[in-house]
Image 1 (cartoon, rainbow, N blue to C red):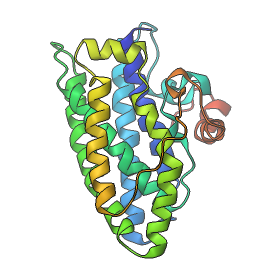
Image 2 (cartoon, rainbow, N blue to C red):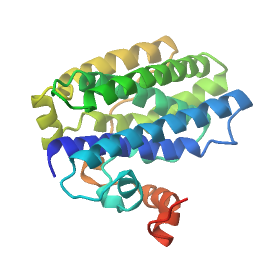
Image 3 (cartoon, one colour):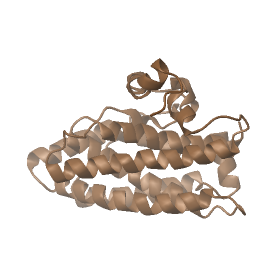
Image 4 (tube, one colour):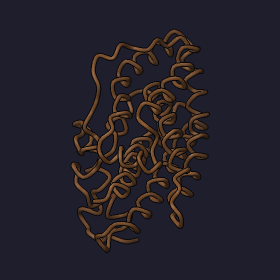
Length: 252
């Protein structure tokens, strides 16, 4: 599998798996407006996955693959999403903080991809569209981090707890392998250290402003890009893929 295809599928996997997780909040949000906002954000992520999977199908050397194949007919080890995307939602503080951390990552990654100079290729255009979408998501998650971080003693405590649980998973953002390095070499991916520096500066400023102290780096997640997942991934896929698995080639 060529590096561009592999990289595109990874981005699509991140979007699909996190979109699936976010959709679980539908009907369970803290109030109606936010319930709708989270559902719409989930739809954005699934729509993003569709765009990326459709592009991937256009450059895949194996004919006959489409967005449904990538979403519903691959096994757990064939998905290469970051592990942070598959974690159960937890409480609303956990979900919002995950979105905030991941939204910053998405803005930086897709901004670099939108500048990818490959004549007659549609991927930079897709990335430019996703950057706008991610910037909107980031504005929303940032406001919620500020609201919860500066809210009550309870909301601040929950945010601190979520930060402790999530921080180790963010280290995987910068766990580059051969595919990532190949994309860096052609200008389609930010350099590892630049991504780490820019992401850290943006995230840490907001967290410090709302009295959230960065936890010590006691451990680091790794392996998502190589198809190694948490114990939660299998159950998520079983629920997401059950219809296509039971009724292959199902259509509406």
